[in-house]
Length: 236
Image (cartoon, rainbow, N blue to C red; front, top):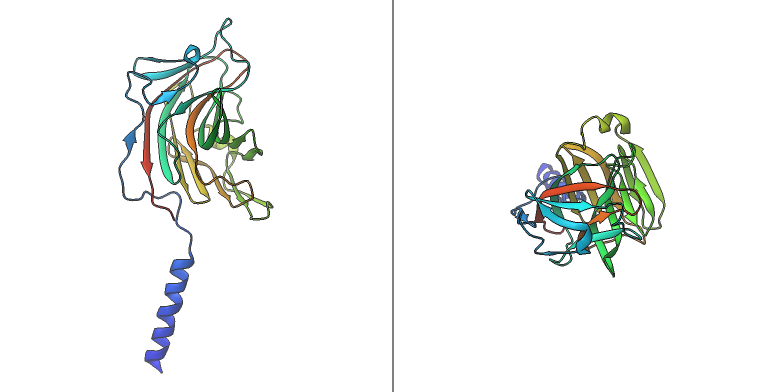
């Protein structure tokens, strides 16, 4: 009888183990690969008048005489990515800026992109949110964990105060963005501090797509990006 109970317990534990989702915020085997050589825009495409390389960084800039009519993007030409870790550093060199890192997105033509975005901006509530460009808009604010069910219903929990999280970065200094995307699960950190967590199993969920950087229409801005690294992960 004891042997039979042990077997049943082992079988039950095995079922539980395989039923748990893979953790989205842990590293998997593999190596980070640099997506930017620090000298040229090789491997990237965008409207040349808005993007250049200077002092080892990609510079996104608008001026009084050089503004986009709408949001424009610098697109990595390495193809679609599905499950991955992405790290980069950025710095804002202007009083105003609005930008973002596109993941699992699609190129609609003429350097216009639709898809998930990790937001960057001088507006105090925007940096660190999870946004969907040309889609569902703001999905999770800083400090929120969002679960979108298969029927599209949303459940939101707060794990940290969004104003307290903003104290962990100064965007006038080099700031690290780090996202892990595995299956439907996304975890994003800035300077090592978790900004949001999203599980998107809704009808509009995106399983794969391109990477890109946004330059937002509107005011004048200068932003620098460097140390862009990508690690491909195994599917959950």
